Length: 502
Image 1 (spheres, rainbow, N blue to C red):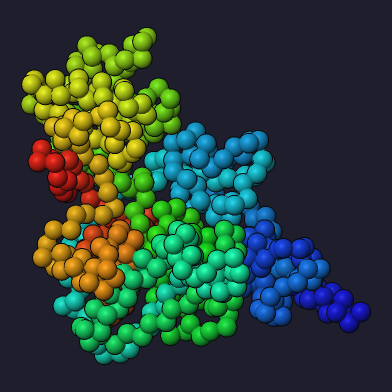
Image 2 (cartoon, rainbow, N blue to C red):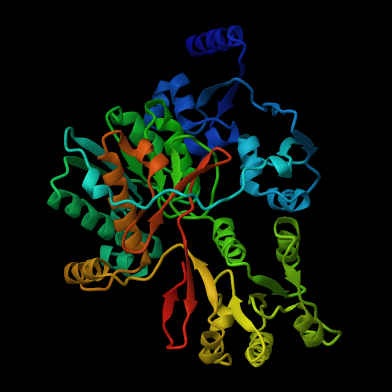
C-alpha cells in the first residue's frame, strides 16, 4: 500500500512540472533498454525515477516513466514541409519519394528511428535546404608533433567480449567460441589493433590511462547503461564503442552531460545526430559522393548502365545527379550500343557507372567497353566490388583494361611506416592484420592523439584531417551529425594491382 502512495505522489509531482507520465509493468524477458526504446527515452531516465532498476528489473515490477511528451509533435520551420506516414511506409521509401536522405529525415525526427507507424507526422526538410555532403578543405596534419603532455587523459573502450556468456556456456569451450563466434573474433581483431595503438602512445610518452569495459550485448540488449551508472565518467576524455549503432547512441546520450566524445568505430549505419557522437566509418552515400565529385572535378562525361531491376538506383541518380546520362536496353535485354555510343564524348574521360547483377551481362558490357576504347577514353566505375564482378566467367583483364574504379573507406598499405605496422602486428599475433584490426589501430591512435591536443578531441576534429595505416579521419558536421567523410578512390591497373586514384 505504501508503494502505491509513493507512486501516486511521484505522478502528481511530475504532472505539476508539465510532464506526461506513465507507469510500466515489466513483462517476462523485457530489458531496461527495450523499455527505454518503447517510450523514446534513455535507460538513465528510467533509473533516475526508479533507482532500484540500476541492479536490474524483474517481471511484474512497476516502473515510473516520466517524459516531457510520449509522442512529441515535430517543430517545423518556414522551409520545412510536413508529411503523414502512410500504411506500410518505411523511412527509406519516404526518403526516395522526396529525394532526401534517411539521415536528413532522422535529423528532423529523431524519435521515429525505431517507431515509425501509420499516421505519424514527419517534418521533412526541403531538398534545397539540405546541407550537401561535401569533401572538406581541411589540411591533413600529423598530430604527433602537436601533442600536449601537460595533463593525463583518460580513454575508455566499450568492447563486446561477452565474457560472462562464454564462461557460463556449458556446451562450448572458450577455444570453441574463438573458432566459431564471428562477432567475438571481430571484437578480438579490433582489440588487437587498439592494443598496438595504446602501446604506440606509451612509446611516445603520452600520459593516457585506458580502461576497457566488457559490453555484454545481444541484438537488442546491452549493459552499457549499467556500466555508466556504476562508474565515474566525469574525467573521461573520449569513449570508443560499443560496436552496434543503437548501443553507441545510448552511450552518447548517457554521457552527453559530460560532453564526452563517443566514437562509433565500426557501424556503417548512421542514426541520431548527437553533438558528442562521431561516426568513424564513412556512409555509403559519402562514398558515392566521392565518385561524383571526382567526375566533376576533372570535367568527365558520365554514363550510367543500370539494371532495369534497380529502380531505386536510377531514381537516386535522377534526383541527386541529373547531369548523369542513362544508357538503355533493347527488347532483348541487351545494351543498346548505338544509343550508348551517342552518349560518349571524345576528348574527355567517359566514366561508365555499372550496376548489373548478372555476370553474363557484365561480361557482355565489359567486352563492348573494351572495344570502344579504340575511339574513346573509358573508365569503368562501380559503387563497390560486388560478388558478380568476381565471377570466374569475367576475365580480370576486362576490369584492369577498363581500370575499374570504386570508392573505399580504406586505402592501400604502401609507405614504409605502414608496412612496418603490418610486420609488427604479424610478429605479435602470428597473422597479418585484417581490415578490422587496422581500424582498431587507426581509430584508437587517432582518438588518443586528438585527446592529447591542447584543446582536446572536439577542437581537433573541427580543424584537422588525419590519415594512418589505412583510414582517414575528416569529421564533418552534416545535418547535426558528426560524420567521417575521409575516403579514397581505388582502381584496378593493367599490372593486375590496385592503385589509389585519390
